[in-house]
Image (cartoon, rainbow, N blue to C red; front, side, top):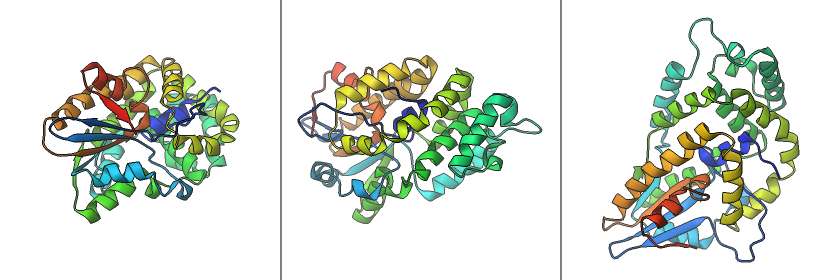
Length: 292
């Protein structure tokens, strides 16, 4: 089953990807590392969720309950989002007479607008966006149109729960870093990235419900196999959005492992499966991880 870049984006920045599993043992995309100092949990995230995916597996809730500090990729509080919006107007938008149509070319731009109309994303909303930001906006809007909601996402859920419970929060990177990352997206294989998203939308629509079901199984092998296969087609994208970030995160996770606090880390599931994943890098560094 071929997957488009629109699905890859859902587990890199808008995480998670689902694939039909042959596993007969149900687990979550949840791992733990136990040391003499503490326990660190890592949960593969889905930023846009549906109500039917709740309640979460009891092992996920228990891991949260056992943790002192909640860690996200970046701060999702409204104050941070407002700062990001201002920064996106500065960095993510074309200045002067330049437009997205000029960057993509008429044929690709017309196809984008046609697909945007199907999901009620107005042309005026994206015409001044740089390509990487436009692709992210299109991908997010596609899933919103399908009934997924950010306020049901795992980060939002645990952010609200953590504030109520008096948990401490930490972050692996900044929203500004993520913005810069997507601005860079337009620098490699631009036509292929957009065309892949458009050509496979109709084919992939029928798999969404089954993909949601198999998220709960935690089929790491198939997740990793598909991610590696598809991301290898876009080496710069893979390096910038996965490999380098995973390496940076592992450094910080190892710092967490030297404290006396328990951590509950929620990141895009694409970072936890496949070659050079956070999980594999930690194993290479000598840590024993258990999927639960």
